[in-house]
Amino acid sequence: MGGSVKITYASLSAPSDEVHQGYERALEKVRGTLGLVHPLLIGGKRRQLLRTFPDLNPADTRQVLGHFALGSRQDVVDAVAAAQHAFVEWSAVPWRERVALIAKVGDLLSERAFEFAALMTLEAGKTRFEALGDVSEAADFFRYYARQMEEAGGFDLPLERLSPNEETRSVLRPYGVWAVISPFNFPVALAAGMCAGALVAGNTVVLKPASDTPYSALRLVELLEAAGLPPGALNLVTGTGDEVGMALVESPDVAGLVFTGSREVGERIARRFIAARLRPYILEMGGKNPAIVTASADLAKAVEGIARSAFGNSGQKCSACSRVYVDPHVFTEFAERLVEKTKSLRVGNPAERDVFLGPVINRRAVATYEAAVSEARRDGRVLTGGEVLKDGGYAHGHFVTPAVVDRLPLDHRLLRDELFVPFVALAEVGSLEEALTWANRSEFGLTAGIFSEDPDEVRTFLDRIEAGVAYASRRGGATTGAWPGVNSFGGWKASGSSGKGAGGPYYVQQFLREQSQTWVK
Image (cartoon, rainbow, N blue to C red):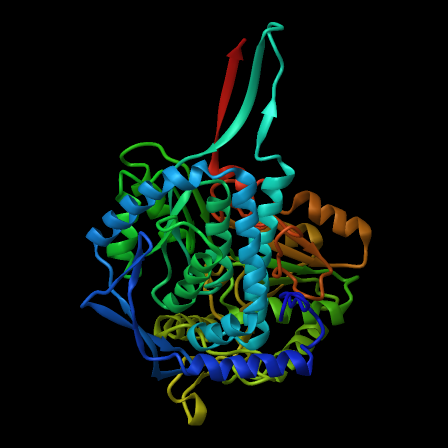
C-alpha cells in the first residue's frame, strides 16, 4: 500500500478496487512460497532442525504452508545467549539511531502490506480487511514507539541540584534480554508491538510465536534483519509452549518478559517467571467484554458496532464483545435487528472479497464453540447461528456460524468465561445501574462499550466502568478497534498486569529501568 492507504479495524468504508487488486496479486505471490522447511533464527544464523511441525491453513487443513523447526530447550539457551551477546552492541547504539531503524521498519511494513496480509489470510484465517488492518497496526506500532522515544528525548532528564557543583540526571536504561511470547490472532501486529517496544528501548529479544502462526513471525523477523538490526538482537525460536515457551520463562538469563494470551496461561507464566527472582513482566490477557444498550441508543449504531466487535476476526479478539446488556424498552427491536445483521454476514474462504468471517483457528476452537452452543440451547435460547459448517467448501476447514443467544441466567458461565469464538450473549436489564453492576461483576476488565444518546448516561458509564478501554456509541466497534497512538490498549483486573496499555504513551517506559546519575564536578 506504500503507506498511502491505512485500513484500521474501525474503518467503515470498504477497501478500494486498487487495494483489492494489490492484495490479490500478493496472494498469488505468497502461494508460490508454500511448503518449504523453515529454520530457527539465532544470532543472525539459520538453524535447521530434523524435528519440524506443519503450519496448516485453517480454512483448508489439507494445505501445508510450511514446515517449521521444532525448537528445544537447548535452542532457547542458545538464543538467549546470542541475545545477551548482541545486547552489548545494541544497547550502546545511540538512541536516535535506534529510533531511526525502528521507524524504518514501520515504513517497510507499509510497503509490503499486501504480502503480509495475504500470508495472514492463509495462516490465521483472517479476511483481507482484518489482515490489512493487522499490518497497518504493526507498522504504526513501530512508528509510534519510535516517536515516543524521540519525544521523550531518549528518557534522559536533568534533575535538581543539592549543590552548585553537582549535576544529576534521571536516565532510563534497558534491562537486557526480553522474552516475547506472541499470540495467533494478531500474528504480525502483536509480535511487532511487543518487539518494537523492547528493541527501541535498547533491549534484545527472543521471540516465541504461537505454533498456529509461525510463518508471519518469521517474515517479521526477516524484515527487521533487512532493515539493519544487528545479528542476535532479535532471535526466533519456534516450537511448543510446553518446551520452548517454558524454557524461555524459566531461563535465568532473561531479564524481562512480555506475553499476550489467555489469563490462565499468563498467570501460570508469571508465577514461573518470578519463582527464582523478581523480574519485570508485562501480561496482556483476555476479556469478557460487555456492551450496554440503553433506551436512548441509536440502534443502527449499536447493531453495527456490536456485530463488528462480536464477529470480527471470527470472534478471536481479546477485545471481542461477548455480552450485551440491553434496556427492556429496546430489547426486542435490538435483538431482531442484530439477528438480521448477523445472518447477513458471510462465512467462507477469508481470501474472498465479501467474506466477513473466516475460519476459527483450530479444532480446539471449534470444540469450544460447540460446547458453548450446547449450553446455550440447554439453559437459554439460540437466536441465530450455532452451526459447525462441514459440507462443500467448508469440509476441510474450521468454520462455524456466528451465534447470538439470549435468555441465559445473568450469572451463567457463558456471560462470565472468555470463549474466543464468534458467540455473543444478550441479557435484558432494567436500568443502566443494573447493566453497570453486571458489566463490572467480572474477573476481567479489558474493554467495554455503551450505546446511548444521553450525555449523562455516557458520563456515568465512563466514570464507573471497570475496564482499561472504554468506548461510547462507536459504530466502528463497540469494544474493539484500538489503535497505536489513538487508543491505549490495556486491561484492568485479570486482563492485564501493568496498568499501562499497548499503543499508549507509557508503554515503552516499561522496557526501561531508571538510573539516577550524580556527578560532582
